[in-house]
Amino acid sequence: MTRITGQLVGTAVAGHFGLTMDDLCSVRRDRRVSVPRQIAMYMARQYCTHLSYPAIGRLFGGRDHTTIIHGVNAVMDRIVADREFAGVVDAVERHLQDVIGIVVKRQAEAKKQVALECHDQVTEVERNISRLYSDLSRQYQRLATLRGFSSEEAA
Image (cartoon, rainbow, N blue to C red):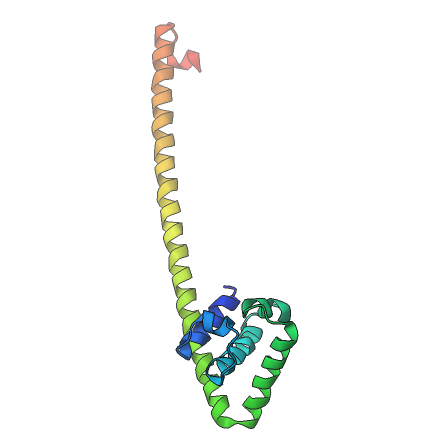
């Protein structure tokens, strides 16, 4: 299973709102940035269960863990109270899941490519070993012949 990173979540959420991760990490407090930042914090908490509140705070510009708790709770409260906002969060989550799906697919393709390359390399090594064994066997037979042994006696 692929571990979802906070950076991936933040970048996907920022992209959904036409922002960058730098925008989400900035000190800006206008709603155009603060609401997506809180949604990104909420999504990071949902998708990156391996990250603590302080770790999420570091991800979003070095914010205190209490700021992350407040942001996550604010999003949860607003989802319950505001259907339109809940729809926005659902749309962001669908976008995030699409991005995660793309990343997982690319990782699987990359792993497959690496496996194919490794297989090709192993096959080449096996061929080289076989050639070396054949060469060694011929050299052994020549040496035995030079010393006057038959190949059965040399063995």
